[in-house]
Image (cartoon, rainbow, N blue to C red; front, side, top):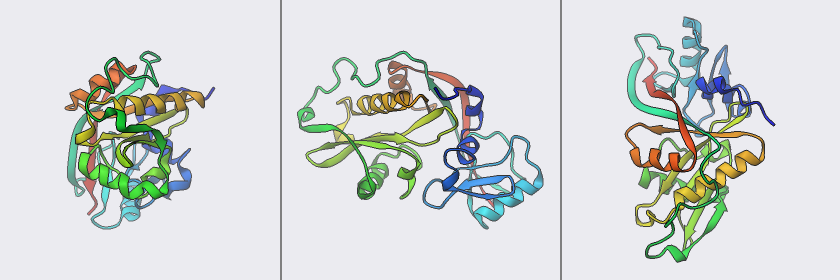
Length: 242
């Protein structure tokens, strides 16, 4: 069984980039970020010195987006704030019913036309990007699917829902990009996809976690029904390099 040290979730981006996702990283000194079109997330150490910020700025280039995710370190004052979003980090507690739909899910017109859960490969990227553009579940780029397994649901051949694996700190896997097309909502697709990912993650000896915007009360309620519980509040922050 892999380590489940919960403290690695305090810096999930840095722990992923220096570990499981090292092959997708760009590094300079102690600063680290993902390769272009994989993710915009960046990380520095818990108590960064000016050189670390200078190294990250060099990695990102002038005017680059430093998506610091939930890191608490404050960048230099000449880094322009771009966004700040309140959210929460949730971990799977072992409760819920992974892999099963809530009572009543799947009901509704057209539900019977939906296929089962399928794994999405490189040939599905255009559809995945289109679904993300329509539903806006969070950052997703042409190479984001390289972070882990992504699953989807098709309705008469059209991708209408998906979810996948993103950050991979030691012993943990983040579930992310959970989204359903507006015309396919209310059929339990999100619950089925999250449940399938939970089952896969547990099978390899890891534990699921996720992040969600605090304002997304519907998603929080779903995740709680599926066995997730809040671990800590987080603030997602982005900055523009000088």
